[in-house]
Image (tube, rainbow, N blue to C red; front, side, top):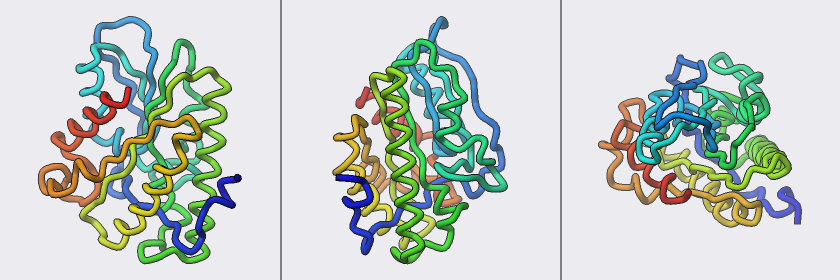
Length: 229
């Protein structure tokens, strides 16, 4: 069954959980760990890139270098004033060296709704919002196929937690995350559902912008990723 046929277009929408306030759109390519070549890379948006804490925590915990190409504000499709389409999540992967890479840790899609074509989708699954989500999931499926073709052994997708910025977006995020839970494993993607880990701890785990993780929140996300590896 195709992704398009498997979607219930009367319900689909996605969380805008990426960098609206993140004006540092440069990639973070910092080394760590014990040196030497790396087998892991990160691609995605400001959940990874804004503070860089998840990357640092993972390198410290795993005691290895991890390449990161994540950039604040980046979308799955297209670009915006914070992140041009040149650095959309699939382009981050395409432009990166895959030499020795076995694992890709990633997220993406939130900024397509926060800053892209779905910026007006905060209240419900209108036909326009459904088309944006369809496009995001089609791009994700193609990216995963490319990763498998490149010999990537492990793909880990970090799902978006519920934010404090918009209760309407959280309902949409719940449906999006449930879709991913149901479909990503069959695509060969390990999906991390971060919602329960953040629920009840929002004041400690989410910054004042209502979207991005604090250092404590990033520690939780890094631990979830490490458990999935």
